[in-house]
Length: 200
Image (cartoon, rainbow, N blue to C red; front, side):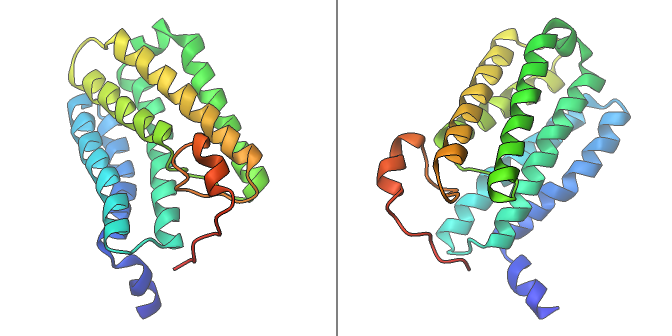
């Protein structure tokens, strides 16, 4: 029990766990048709997503277990929002079916490559992925709050996701280990000579 508490009873990990537990709650809310409450839940998820990584680094509480919780909650939340859009805002899918499918296929390719190469569903903290997450949260919250969705925000989200996916693929295919905090593929030459940080 103490071993479990050692790894999970930290503020960053508790925030990640909160985001993970938020997913089934938001599923119930989405199935009941309360889109504005889903938007509120996504605001909470976005805030905890921004806070847990920052706190983990500032408090020197970066752990492999915490990274796994963070990655799991992020991927579950991302997958769920795609379905919640279909349930609550089907017009988004009807208007943009091909783009919708393209983003999903590219995401599945990234997940598959990460699993095949490193036996893990990677959650790389690249600058492009952070930008894509912020733009995606803005689009989703706006879409669930208002009757009509913004095509400009939708296209911005798609472009940001595709750029982030392309950079993640570049990292996964060119590196011999996954450096989650590489920042950008442009920093590859500098970071490639660095040693792996010790696991906590």
